[in-house]
Amino acid sequence: MSTEIILKGQVLSFSRSPFDEGTPQDATQVSEAVAIQDGLVVGTGSLSDMQAQLPAAQLVDHGDKLIMAGFVDAHVHYPQTAIIASWGKRLIDWLNAYTFPEEMRFGERAYADEVANRYLDLTAANGTTTVCSFCTIHPESVDAIFSAAQTRGQRIVAGKTCMDRNAPDGLRDTPQTAYDDSDALIARWHGVDRLDYAITPRFSPTSTPEQLEAMGALWAKHPDCLMQTHLSEQVDEIAWVKSLFPQARDYLDTYEEFGLLGARGLYGHAIHLEERERHRLREFGAGLVHCPTSNTFIGSGLFDMNGLMAEGQRIGLATDTGGGSSFSMLRTMAAAYEIGQLRGTPLHATQLLWLATQGSAAALRLEDKVGNLAAGMEADLVVLDLASTPAIAQRTAQAQDLWEAVFATIMMGDDRAVAEVRIAGQVA
Ligand code: GUN
Ligand code: ZN
Image (cartoon, rainbow, N blue to C red):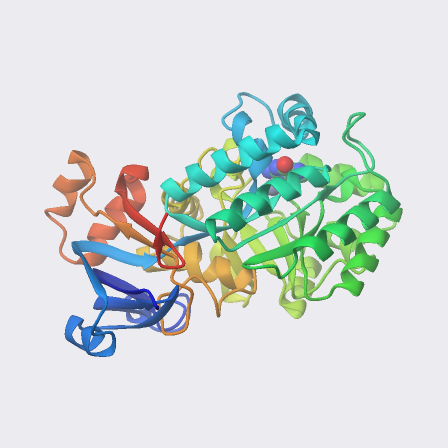
């Protein structure tokens, strides 16, 4: 028997990118209801039209709450859940002082399982239904997050983080084991249920040229996998990359040279880019991932959203937990807005919501599956209360239109704004 549900509220869909020509609001449609059958969206429209399509559906009335696609977090490190908000260091010292010691613990499967489930609980409570996660060098850490997501019926992307230098004992693999372990994990998980594998060299400083070459060969063997890494996050890091790869034209070249630049490549941060790098990223249609709370927390710099969008880059949005200081994509959108302000280019509420859903989904090449409420899309969604706290409610009471109300929740909202989350139509 099929499961049929109709949700009533203010149902938000995107008909195009709000960064394209035209007013941002005109990129959206707000309907009265969304119809769901067996985990997929049947359509959006008036309640009577939806009921005509699914006469036997259970009706859930969410009043005037906002119903939209669940958030897609395009760059996270689930193993850093327990060291989020660690004080006082910049990137390289932060990795050595906080991150690597914690990541060392994920060789133990029971610990990896515990944190993977804790992480997916925390993100679901914040309205996030899809994540793209780095794991640790341990295959157990990959099995843990994929198993947890599989049990929840959740669409995620993840991969074993590969590092063979500049990391402590116990946290290094080799070019060969990185290749073999990743290859075996791809065979076990890639394309199983809603799970996809991302080949994951952490970043150039922690991989030898031999390991980067092995990762390039693995990607060539599995071109339908994503490939995720970090690029040009902090100025000191870029200087380090230059000293480690003296022949390279720039940071991106350390990937490009080894076959690690492509349309299914995801490059986290991408703040301090050279002209040549921007040109090549654009040419390949690669995905850039903006991680605003991380960039302010670790003190990395201000992402050039408007400039990069204007030149046609593919851009997603992410928490970068635990370099990022929040599990919440609402808080992440607020930080993206604040960085836009510091650059003199404020983002509209529709643009922020699009980045957190369709933008991230497109970076992950999943835009035909998640990140929007439209016929045929997977029914992962979040229901947002636009008056979730007294402070927000008193601002919303004075809002002239939906976007003013939504913007107050983006700037001031947290998990209290998340009234309901559904994964493949089921309450999470
Ligand atoms: N660069 C390499 N590894 C990391 C990481 O774990 N977090 C962040 N923010 N940057 C990185
Ligand atoms: Zn990261």
